[in-house]
Length: 286
Image 1 (cartoon, one colour):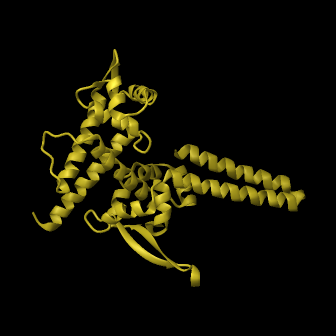
Image 2 (cartoon, helix red, strand yellow):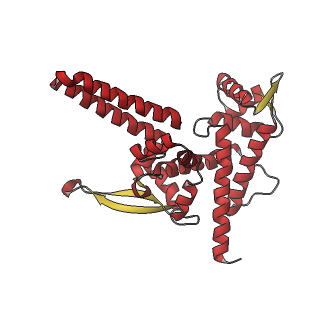
Image 3 (cartoon, rainbow, N blue to C red):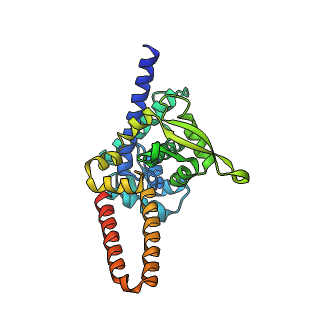
């Protein structure tokens, strides 16, 4: 197999793994459901008693029971006399995570025996990196030139800039090369400093086009209008920028009302129409 074909196969495998993890994310919110994920991997294909789960994970019984309740509602587990087992749907999610992490370990050179099962911490580490990557690509989507400063991306991913830079820089050096890492000087005189920016490459844009958020924008006129206003695809960044716009607009509207009381009713009425329009866009998009 030629180098080009190997890179193409590796790129497609990477995209497929992200797609599988996105399917898991649709069942377990990977950015919030850490305990559910830990419980799922702890139970595995053998099941466990609630008391054993509490002891193994070293968390409160209340937290475990709350997570198990959510998992039962999602159809991931069944509980009988305190014994917890994965349902068929739960086993499907478990096998996806086990296979994806095992394949990733093999591709990185840390081979696992075929019969071995990744530990809970292997899965958590891999999923954490996936969540960061997904957040960054969604945030870069529809940003000017597909580019944002590292500090902005770190705030969106809710992680330190240095930690995120270490992770993202890997995907600026090896296949699939998803990002370009750009150093740019900003400011003047004593306030001049060098900032790190990340920009989507051609492969990064291809992955962006496979995200459910991107497909939703393509299908929804309201989402397209909202993206054109906020210039981003990421839900948290969309809402953050809308809060800024509405706060600024409200301050300006109130200033006009105070300065020109004769047109106050018209200005407030117009601003309420704008706020209602934005609210409709958000409700139709998310």
